[in-house]
Length: 203
Image 1 (tube, rainbow, N blue to C red):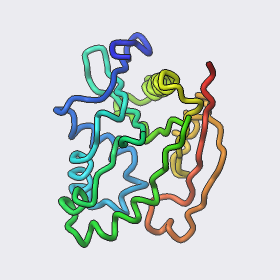
Image 2: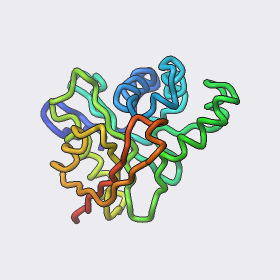
Image 3: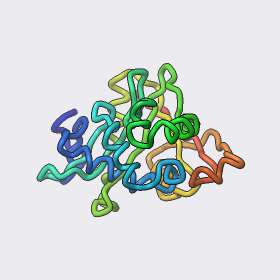
């Protein structure tokens, strides 16, 4: 997939360089801070944790012709995820007390992998690159990657406070299958409900 062009100005390739780790963490935080801020703030610590744990082995990157990182599409397998981390990673950033109460709550946001289903783990685009087709290019590359792995469908989750992302997924062919209201936990997270969306991968 390296070197393939999703459009004349967007190149898709696996992962990101270690020198881009802080920037990748910042893009992730900008995209998902409304969802994660109640658990992961203050921002400085959230960015430190993300930079420590974000894994280039579990994403595809969109770049401009001159190599600038424009966005990432993360995924999860039985070997890991774009942003994982251990209890020790949490403790390194938040201390053990902070890690002990954050870990079980963050676990509520996790999705288990299933045979034949490619589980996405977030897609996000740099602010200056939005509206240029980067998200669509990344989704196209994810579909190709999932097909290459022999997967039958792609699954992702979108929260109610991100209608723009849901509209993108629907335009690309995803359909909503289940919406979960998180009830009182809405006071801990920055959203009220999460919708699972799936897309069948045609041969």
